[in-house]
Image (cartoon, rainbow, N blue to C red; front, side, top):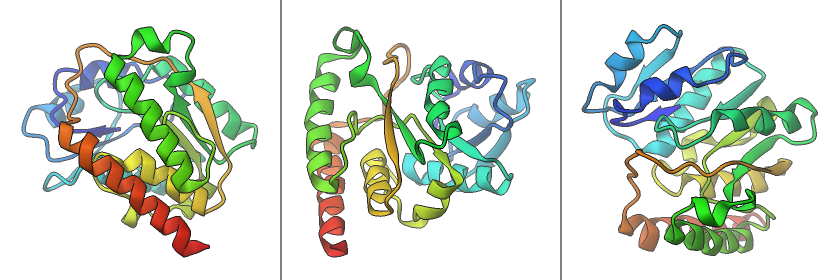
Length: 226
């Protein structure tokens, strides 16, 4: 669970994690608010990892996956600390991994029945555009490329080069790129779009420059590998 300045929502998000989850690893990416203190005051056990400086959401996820893997778990899921991922969808993300039908599952908000109504129009439209570009770049039939709600088995954890994962916004596209290059079995799972009181860190520069750059880099990586 990556977190940066999420004091307002991190408590409710952590306590909403289903009880079948054995370990919660929260990576505080050098928050300037009370995120870490709130996590420490919760009654539920949480492994708290703190970055000394802000490294980005992708880097926080890489740190969290490595720490979770060191605990000897079989499956790892990524949930944001801002409550934007519905905990009730977690079981559906894990089921294909339990059944050994996939190595990597990812949320697909666009496949949810009322996605157009639930998502802000610019997010809905932009997601379709970036998903199309990502599919072309990496050769993988995956939708909702911007969704970071994912789950992995240990084969996927071992196959992905976490040191080279894009550290900031755009990491979901890069993660899909690595999954495709490593030949992982990827499955989309419909999840409910959640938009409420969270404060998005996504900026115009991310949409206009960062994410297109990450997608272009993924395309070049794929060409170099063939």
